Length: 388
Image (tube, rainbow, N blue to C red; front, side, top):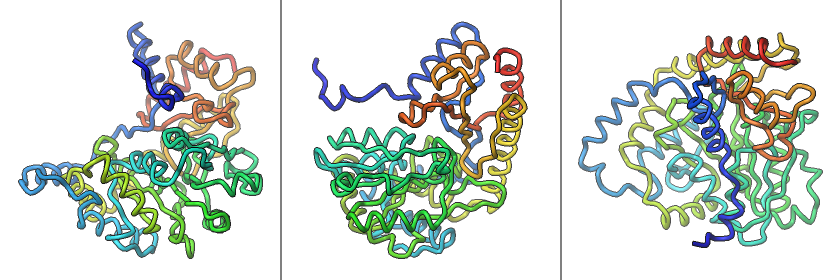
């Protein structure tokens, strides 16, 4: 049975390969310490779970949901943006509920990219940006994220002929996988650049609430005039430990939101309204100490990991946001060989940087989604079993 050409071009999903290696090692009796996929290990707050249980029992929620999302959820999202970023959004035209932000990110390419159109995507990056381009038969142009540029793209390095053909640019700060951050000055430069070339600017802001040492990530929509060409993808997954719930939203330019809506209304029927009700609870009624408490937990884990790596010979500064640590591989390794050595010699899973794009070579990603004691154990295993 012949698969479509676009499917033949899709590489195996990075985390599926990691899960396979993990299962194989476990089958051999290895006690695996996994710094792999970024999936919170803490439970969803009980008040959100209780709201979901209540909403599931309501017959009105058993019918098809609104395609664009319930008016109540979109209003809650707008109110959250106003409180968090001082950005005013029209719930009816500038916000759309998503079945997790990943879904909206993938679909935005189908709404605006024709075969042969160029997309500008960071490298390294969340793999869906490239795959969304591929599914739309577009052409991805990589914007390298280099350590010497603080993992920010250099817009001046994009050839003019490429910029003129580009339909979409994707940014993601705080960044996965590098944990880099961006300020409003950088976002303003991105907005100006995209306006100059009539490019839709998409910002994946999934990690906006995961920040440390007093840092508070901005929204690209805080830039004056950004809503003319920009949309931001927000997620409840990471800040509220709701990865499995699949709830997020897109916010910003009404014209772009409308285009995304055409795709969504024809390929899905919207998110279950009970999940949206649980999302409203998260956005409006969560204990104000919950997110700071989670960030304190991740900050402690970050400190234990980076201090431990530095004690082994690394020289790393502490990241300000996300729950990732982007670590250069030791001399004598590339990202794949170091990943293999960590698994085979230490029973530790990390993610090879090259899996996020060519510019990820020379790095691995650690996710801080395991207990502090296991992080300390991992450092001990590395000290005992690796020649660094």
